[in-house]
Amino acid sequence: MPRPKGYSINSSPPDDGEDSESLIQSDAAVPSLCCSSRLSLAFLMFLGFSVVYGLRVNLSVAMVAMVNTTDPRPAQNSSNVHACPLSPGTENTSDTFLQPEGIPQYPWDSETQGWLLGAFFFGYLLTQIPGGYLAGHYGGSIFLGLGVLGTAVLTLLTPLAAQQGSYWLFALRALEGFGEGVTFPAMMAMWARWAPPLERSRLMTLSGSGASFGAFVALPLTGFICQTLGWPAVFYLCGGAGCLWSIFWFIFVSDDPRTHRRISKEERDYIINSIGPQGTGHGWSVPLLPMVLSVPLWAIIITQMCSNWSYYTLLTSLPTYMDNILHFDLKSNGFLSALPYFGSLLLSTGSGVVADSLIERRVFSITTVRKLFTLTGLLLPAAFFVAVGYSGCSHILSVTFLTLSTTTGGTSSSGVFINQIDIAPRYAGFLLGITNTFGTIPGVVAPIATGYFTKDHTLAGWRTVFWVAAGINVGGALFFTIFGSGKIQPWAITEEERAETETKRSRFIST
Image 1 (cartoon, rainbow, N blue to C red):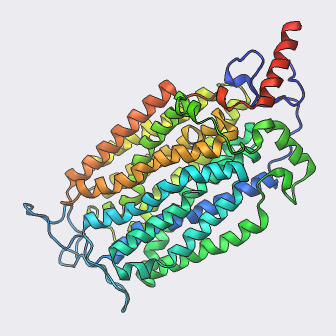
Image 2 (image 1 turned 180 degrees about the horizontal axis):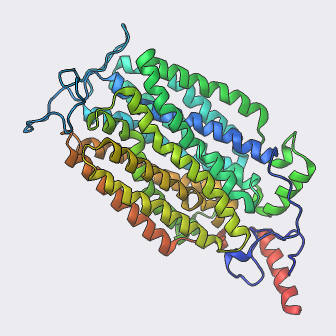
Image 3 (image 1 turned 135 degrees about the vertical axis):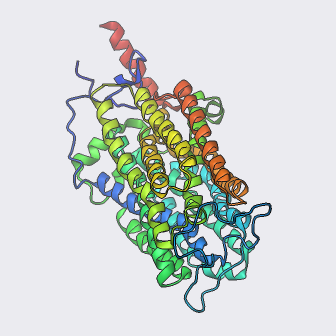
């Protein structure tokens, strides 16, 4: 049966049925995604988040070159400093990674390194919610652009801060997190106005996969730059790339399809009509109490915290594992640390296309699709994490399982990580600020916990790290399966939509 003209996926259907029924009319004209303004926006976001994650992870590899020893104090009560044997010919070499003449190195122990790697997230926690709130009201482009630009400028100051001492570097990294905290909520606020409901998964996973691409490029590139130019060059080049990207962002991007200068009328009308009233700013007031009491929102919060524990563990500590345990040289360290993110990039982008197809063809409801992709994105990585812990000193097995863990985790991009826009499109940026604030807590705690578990540089310590991450992943998967939802929540429906729903219900009853 054809849908009424202008019916939107964000509107409640007349019979309040299953969420898969809330689709735009099947006979609506759909402008091609190829060469469209919405695809251009996704590509610019992809590049932006590539830069953002380059700025975020460069320290994790550069740290190997910045310190003159992994830990200046040998582990006590240990007869063997190295958990795994060194490669032939390297048994008598120093742990010190030599830098070009004049490049300083610092005597930071494992715990200090853990605090420095987690410092970013202390600042990142503070701006998520206010950033999402303001982006939902004013539009997200200015906040996303300034967030990247501010982080890039601060990154240029990293070598100077390191010279002043670890406390100064900690403060600088926290400030970088403070500036970058607005970026993901701003992205979500923009897609609430730009992403047609049947294209949400593919557009949002494409833009968000820039994070995996950024890690994939930055990790090996950082190792190469450290060996050839010295570690300070890493921060100068990454900071410069962020400043360059921001120029293109401010020139070509608009908050809303209604104000975009180069969009076609056909595409603009399609986006506006398919999103409906949810594609507007939420104003100054938000339904805070209903949000606090919303079980589907808490399902997103808890699950993202669980998933992010393993993600941030690898993001900040994998280069250290490659160096301390497997003894890869810095170039190999950077490349192998990056390999898992390439797999995640491919699978997350592909999962977006599959998820949209399943919803559009009504194979599964939105709720079922989100739960399926979340389950696979958390349970499979958990299994591979455990396998890593028992791979011992096998380079091949360790790299294989680490790659598979992060690769399979990419499917959750089409699950819990875009679920905010399903349950409350109009407040999606603000909700992402809330969920990301809680989801960032593992970014603070996981590196510190990893430093504590691995202070003796033993395989048993790292096995504990992987077991903890796997167990937390399983808990998150189960929680979302029980309590997650893809239906728009009653507190997120606008007055215009309520009136429209009542009209449709009256017509339905009368017929």
